Amino acid sequence: MNNKLLFALVSLSIVFIFSCKKKEVGIPEIVYYSPYENQLFNFDDTISVHCMVSDEIGIESVKLVLVNSDLSPIGKAFFYYPGSSEFELKTNYPIPPAIIEATENYLLVVADNGTKFKNKYLEIHINPLEKELENVIVLSKSSNQQVGVSAVYPSVGNVEGLFNVDGYYAGSALDSKEHQIYIAGKEVLNLQAYSLSDFGLELEIIPDPFVPMHNAGCLYFDEVLFVANNFYSIKSYTSSGLQVFTANVMDSEKPGQLFRFKEFLLCDMQSKTGAVTHLVTWYVNSSAEKQRIFTNFEVVDYAAAFDNEIFIAVNSLGNSSIKLYNPESNVITDLVLLPHEILSMVKTGEGEVLIGAGPDVFLYSYPGNYPEVVLPGIRAYRIKLESLSQQLYVVGANVIDVFNYPELQHFQQIPLNDSIYDVHFHYNK
Image (cartoon, rainbow, N blue to C red; front, side, top):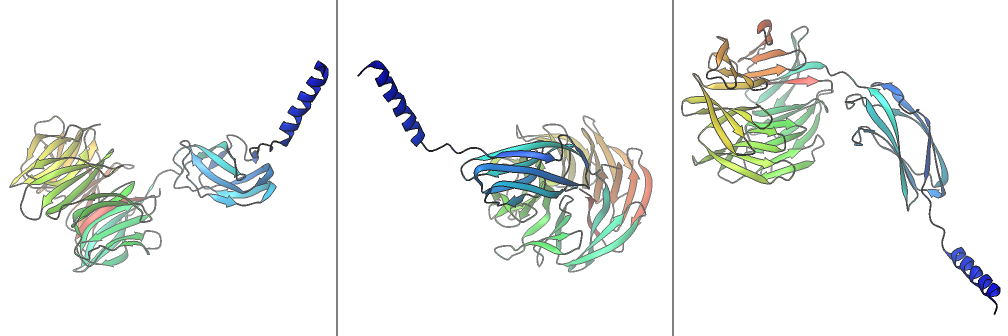
């Protein structure tokens, strides 16, 4: 056999072998027609979406969703199941106004042919909804076995009763993003979440076992709701009731004030039997206990002081003081004594807090040696600083005094008929 014939046979064999191989499945193609790249929208717009999806073997599914600059979903995902080789997607996509935090966002279309998929991002810009204070939600003692929920509108100062909840009050927290108010009771009342739009019950967590479950200061909200139960555990929940954190509590322990600081959760762990007490720290992401430190005090409140340190307001055996705690090194430093029992504390700046103690309100600036009386004769059971207006809400037994800060000029007084448990700022997002 000559060389030419041999070459021809080999070439034909190669062609035959490759022609018998299964053709590789392609990747779907996505072409946007609308909107155009970097198109600008407002928070209350809808986006007219028009794109063409194609694949030679067929498209099993298509997903459309709005994502932020971190590529995390910030809008509702829409799914389509064409079952054809071409699919024309035309729809109006609603922008979720309360979730938009930055102008840079992306439309994402995901096409799947059953074997391979294609992601196609289109950058758009959205002017976010400006954050505004809608009202101040007030929890008060409506009767011996009822918690009253009211709204204060600061611009006019009037109080509107919203609804009542049966049970003995233990704690409350508010989620402006989901427009929910959480209320927990010592007994009778379970942990419940109510809508601030229609005032309906949206979530209820029933304790197991069914015993008085919550102590004062049992709730703390920071992205998720942390709940200190009187028995067995500390847990956290999303707005839909999904449990995302759990830490066990010993039978003899009585969880007190909670505080989230960066990746840590802190709890003032008191004792039911008069035994030793501790300040306990867990990692939020893993629920693992990091450390505990012996204490001889009860925590009234916490406030972030610096990047790695926390102010702690405490009462102990007739003494009241402000301490500095570093959760990284697990070191507590004594700072200053207060002349009266501490009732409340709020951060007003880096290294600076206002403290309600006895009949007065004090200002402490680190590393000062002694706090200064700035609001004499005002007993502050709660102090809250509204960040947008820089107004200070000082909560008395049944009255709220509002001051402009830092001038501390009295702005208005809001009287209530009932004893006030707590107040929360309700924003539009």
